[in-house]
Length: 207
Image 1 (cartoon, helix red, strand yellow):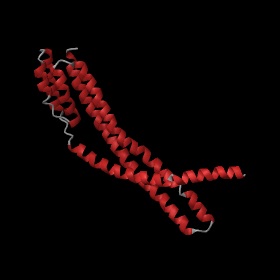
Image 2 (spheres, helix red, strand yellow; image 1 turned 90 degrees about the vertical axis):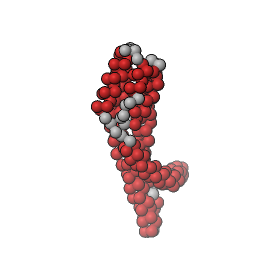
Image 3 (cartoon, helix red, strand yellow; image 1 turned 180 degrees about the vertical axis):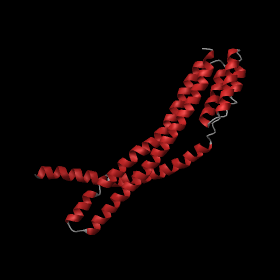
Image 4 (cartoon, helix red, strand yellow; image 1 turned 135 degrees about the horizontal axis):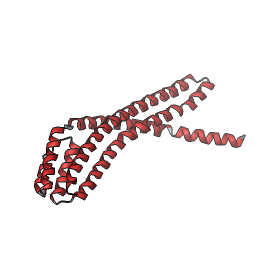
């Protein structure tokens, strides 16, 4: 029994030692999630998709590529006015198109896809980790709370329950922000990748 008690004591001390790191991490996640809201609003203000402009530019690009006028095709591609991700891709691709380096443009599209995935990772990690840490912050203080209850220490019980409830709320708050931003950005980037794929298909005439 003494050996088992030592094991349980080690487990209790280990779990209790995680409380403050969990709380600090939760606070940092909340601050980070609020900064992500500001970044999200800034990104939203830059989104200005124009399907008509995209179709017209791609038609001109396709015509110039068929005529082997790669410099003109590159200039036409630079006239693309879309969401900033698509516009950045078009401007970067125009430099490769001017030199008739179509394979490098496909590589560039993959780089932009990775860039979008990286941006989604931020909010996805917040959405996943925050509730987990909130649950940890809920369970860890329950041990001291039960000890306080068994000893008739109402103050210790109340303080630990307050910590447990607060960490739950904070974790769900940050996780909700991360989940909402992830879903909206996922839809945005699907649309951006569809536009980028359309540009790539336009330039596959030469291939």
